[in-house]
Image (cartoon, rainbow, N blue to C red; front, side, top):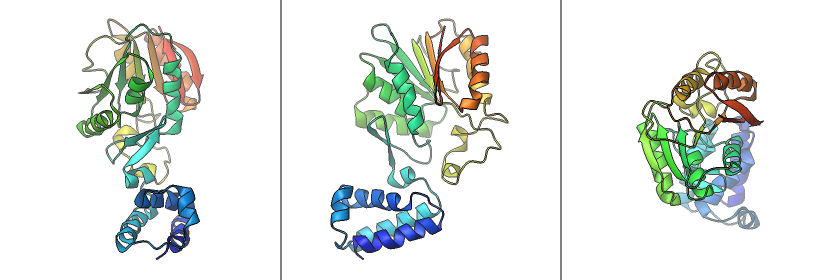
Amino acid sequence: MTIGDFLSTSTKALADAGIDTARLDCLVLLEDILDKDRASILAHTDDRLTATQQTQLEAWMELRKQHTPLAYIRGKAMFYGRTFLVNEHVLTPRPETETIITFLRELSLPDQPRIADIGTGSGCIGISAALEVPDCQVDLYDISPEALEVANKNAQNLGAGVRCLESDLLNSVEGVYDVIVTNLPYVPDAYPINDAAAHEPALALFSGADGLNHYRTFWTQAGAISHKPQFIITESFPAQHHTLALLARNSGYVLERSEGYVQLFSL
């Protein structure tokens, strides 16, 4: 089978399975297995795939036809210009979450600021913070040991000097922080998620009837911290932002800025 044959047949197969990005997905997987860029692949569509390459691509296609996220098939995803390992124990990083890092970089922080990433998952937020904010100290917290294992591997691969610690939200958080960043579950239980999201861990997605159960607990805990962080940055659906602002106000925080899915709160 040539590269062109694979592109033709597999694009149609994915499209027939309801994958909107069928051709792009095929090209991405070809880039992975051939270790070549897209331009080179498209310039050599008459090149033949080896039997091993063809077998692997066919296995990947079967997964993708079942709407398994492309990131899980590849075992990696991009976030803020870096490659992060991902698997079925963590959410795949979303582009909208990158705004958290943008907000964080624009804050006026003390020297050697301490940052906590609550519900870290793959570690993409906290590790990006560690690599983008000069001289900061970052701790990654998650309730899932499997997620922390992924985060720890990403920290090692990217050379980020962070700590990975187990905690249910703020229950076991250690020390004093200048900033908390968090992307907690915020999808309502009955929300109609797409087929790809259905493969992601429900623990990291859903949070009660209105999607805010985790944030209610979080803001109650944040209000009880003796040395509160100056800033807290969160992510949720834009339609939830008003309720989140009220929860934050009850814990002593005011909304400073909101953009897309992300909100910045301060004391």
